[in-house]
Amino acid sequence: MPGSASLFILLCICVGAAAAEGQKTITADTGQSTTLSCRAPNSSIIVIEWSRADLGDEYVFLYRDDRTLQDSQHPSFKNRVDLQDRQMKDGDVSLILKNVTINDTGTYECRVFMEKTRSWISVCNITLSLVPPGQTGGSVGLIVGLILSAVLPVAAAFGFLIYRKHKQQQSQDSYQPPVEFKPV
Image (cartoon, rainbow, N blue to C red):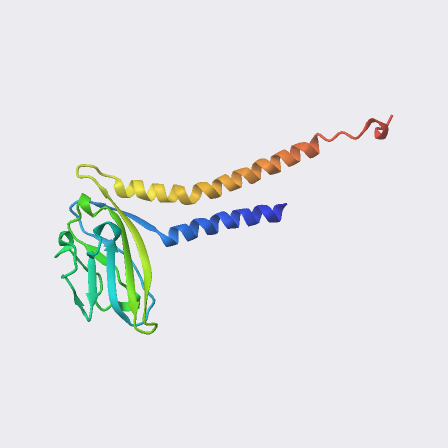
């Protein structure tokens, strides 16, 4: 049984890590700038496309042929977004969003078109939430929430294992041999 308990704990840790890797959530303060951090495979990137599903055919940011294309950009993002590194060193396709507003709340997706494979790949999904004006502590609350969401499943698994071990020990301590085997 100890092997299965270890396997259960390992499974909890792996599932939590995989979920955290696939979807990021960040919190930003209204009126400030924030960075949607994202990395693509380090090879020749031809196109970078940042989008949000609720914007339809318009983009948050579109970069092709070493320049930003604003024709298909949603009007609310014009002159407010740019790449953190236009050189895209080490595959850095992070997006800086300036003067964040409540309307910027949502899930952003970054896709890149790779020259080597001649195909699109989705590299990031980031959910952006905002701290309303006048409120503070959004970042602290997010950090505490992320820590708790990572620690609680593991703590629960350890608690369950300790409980099982305690119950197992109790049942061994309370074992009474049948009457015919008791010394007289």
